[in-house]
Amino acid sequence: MPSQESRLVIRRGSDVALSHLPRVTLSVVLTFTTKKWFTFEPTPIYIYIYIYIYIYIATTNLQKLKVRGRMKPKYMMISFFIIFLQFITLSNSKSIIKNLPGFHGDLPFTLQTGYIGMGQDDSMQVFYYFVESQRSPSDDPLLLYLTGGPGSSGLYPFLYQIGPLSFNYESSKGNNITLELNPYSWSKAANVIFVDLPVGVGFSYSETIEASKSSDSIVAIQSYEFVRKWLVENPNFMSNALYISGISYMGIIVPNVALEIYKGNERGNQPQLNIKGCLIVNPLTDKFINFNARFEFAHRLALISDDIYESTKATCGGDYVYNDPRNVLCTIILNGWMSVPLIKISNGQCTSKITYGNILERGCDARDMEPTCKAYTDTFIETWANNKDVQKALKVREVRIIENWETTNKSISYDFKKNDTIVYSYDVWSSIPSHKQLLTKNCQVLIICGDHDMVFPYVGTLKWIRTLNLPIVSPWEPWFVRSQVAGYQMTYARNGSSIKVATVMGGGHPLAAYNPEEALVMMDGWLSSHAYLSDS
Ligand SMILES: *[C@@H]1O[C@H](CO)[C@@H](O)[C@H](O)[C@H]1NC(C)=O
Ligand SMILES: *[C@@H]1O[C@H](CO)[C@@H](O)[C@H](O)[C@H]1NC(C)=O
Ligand SMILES: *[C@@H]1O[C@H](CO)[C@@H](O)[C@H](O)[C@H]1NC(C)=O
Ligand SMILES: *[C@@H]1O[C@H](CO)[C@@H](O)[C@H](O)[C@H]1NC(C)=O
Image 1 (cartoon, rainbow, N blue to C red):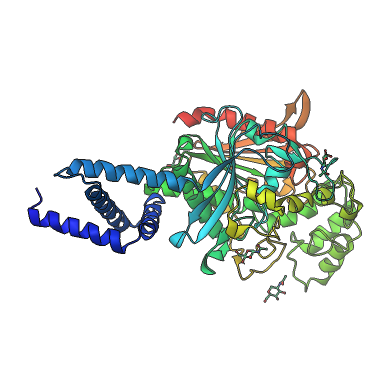
Image 2: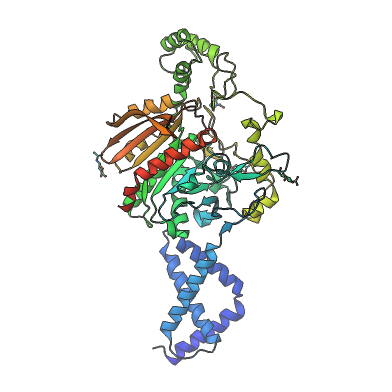
């Protein structure tokens, strides 16, 4: 029971607070402290300061409202109500998007965009696109989808690969870009988050120089922090089965994200995440094996002759890309059929005109403006995303409304043999050790390979999986879409963990861009086959 005197002190305090501390300042302080609390930073001191300030404000407000008497429980209730209000206000950093420029009418699916504040004092603001499952959002799994690069925006797979919308290549012209629905969107079977990570990619930004620095291993840790905070903001999806997925370079990072999550759960981090596995498309897993696999692949697909193959193999000793320049003979032979580095442009006469992303695709030039030319249609995204109306419709913050939105941040993206940049370090050479650890965590892994992808050919994937010496539980066999052979699959398993590898016949590097139906059928079938695990 407070004495007369202490009540007087409280009342004096309230006068001081109300006359000298403008409401705005208080609200800023409170938002800051709440943010700290709800982002689960390990700073319990904030919680105390926070509760103290709230009770204080609640009581002073009551004094102002001329509520008298000793009503401590009521103060408490009111202060908790204010906490609740504050929480609601915070959630406003996410928005449901109803319309998008270029798409006629309301979007027939639920699209949410928003920012998640991460790192010290939320100095990283990470933008994401979330598409709710169009089947059963509460039962279907939740996929965190990481784009390749690294350094490519989540908007790219959203619009060109597995998202609910794609460009209408025929009718889009100049600045008039039109969108249509993708009948094979992965949102037909899963809830999918596309994220712009690390900061500097897409619409994500950092408030400090320090926060703009990243690396393969940091992106893995950031992805874990991201998904944890996203789930705190979207608790409806907390119990859905969670899969980490991605494509291409993310094969280096996805297994590490999953591992971070398993380890975080083991440490008792809250919230506990319902992680079940990984789904990776045409992954780079090991920078030695996967780049070298191009040579083997070129031979298997008849791009180089048996003679060249045999003599190069004998001379180069199994290393065709990092070969010692002192091995002159090897270098000369290699330059004859394929230049080093083995990427995109090449002088080697055998493979220089081949499209690495899909060896069956005819070469084309963006300037020809043919709707069938990928190099041309790939330019639509930058035209569209740089439109101010689009950025406003996506609820991009004013501070990040930009004129030079780029699909890929070149100071982050990787090329064969590229050195670290000022902002990014390519510090993971191989994620095979992480796969080994995942095999002890009850983790299910699916790897889908387009069998005509020469960026990271399937032969490399088969090769590194063999190094794990896993028992085969389901041998190499065809799988089907509409009674046609769609590709081949095999599954390895040990101690409750599994790795399944599936090829898609005729598939290229951006798999779903060439084989959208096959990609959806494989991912949905595989996820459903593990559905029983979600109950555990
Ligand atoms: C944009 O293209 C669509 C489809 O071709 C067409 O209906 C529309 O009139 C065009 N808009 C403008 C402003 O040209
Ligand atoms: C690329 O990322 C870096 C690091 O965050 C950033 O400083 C730079 O502005 C980004 N470039 C573009 C074009 O957004
Ligand atoms: C990377 O750095 C090394 C050593 O500084 C240098 O010799 C090499 O040429 C660089 N590579 C590229 C691709 O810039
Ligand atoms: C088998 O899996 C369990 C978890 O499911 C794990 O604790 C254990 O270490 C694994 N054993 C081996 C030999 O990998």
